[in-house]
Image 1: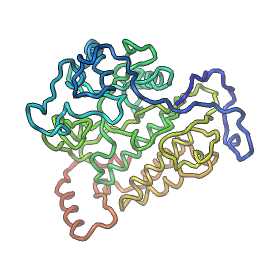
Image 2 (image 1 turned 135 degrees about the vertical axis):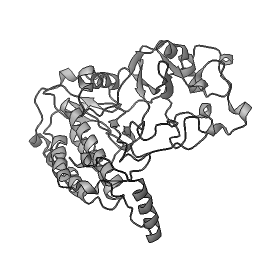
Image 3 (image 1 turned 180 degrees about the vertical axis):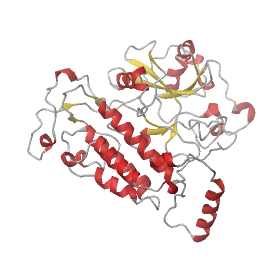
Image 4 (image 1 turned 30 degrees about the horizontal axis):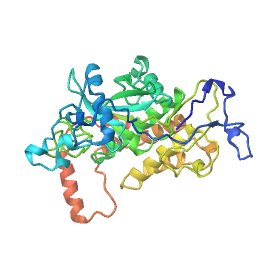
Length: 396
């Protein structure tokens, strides 16, 4: 989404809230970024048509050509992308869409693999080097930053230069689950989620990084504690082999870690650089400053975007989360110059959380419109799943 703008050439004057007033052009020239490029692997095919299985699509040949490369790096692509692959459904008679080797990612620049040393599931993402994504993730996954427990950015297991195209590199990351798969079941789980993502946002911002698209599709979790038998990374409701439904546990008993992912639209600023950009923003077009083609502060955009998740996916969806309303109102300020920072939002949240009753952590999340019979059954199930655990951790 960005061109090769040299950040070092920007003015060094730090931005202030007054700089974001309503005057015609108080900011000076903003940082401009071009239209987002198409994220498609180039068709630099290295073999004749007869080399590829007739059951894969043309763009998938990109990954077949690199199967040997990732194998040498210690990763094994799914069987579908190995030379000589024969579809399993031809012999089994199963529906292609229910076979592991029949599944493909929605986004063609991402592919699934396993680490050969221990079988860990990973995803490999193709990115163009002219973008900042690889450099940002290198920094966030540096040994020193990984020691910080508030670092809730996806870990990078390896970054490799493409063997054929010098403009491309590949990011290897662990397989994660959507943050809300399965749905949240208890108040304490929501409290833990809000705490982690606010801590993570403060961490990123403290290191000069604005995510710029921290929408719900870009927040995920390490699902291994609640899904110890694994899951299929493309169809999360199923087991790895797609033969059964994946079995999940309650996160109130098996806490998970949440992570920000996809830094393709992110910005990194050096100390003193002005936090002002002019681009298309992220997927949340409800953010007020994106309604006009004007410069904006991506750090303030992050605060509003995260508040929208708290509001739409929790406060408006479940009963018993009235305490989130105060935080949402504090963060969703229309005017960016009056909107709080991530650090201020975290401090307000810590104050709210400190006033909650620890005994409420296990209270079941209820949805508006539940019938009395549904409520009785769901409450009984929730009570049956309760056991003795330390629950005060969620409210401290």
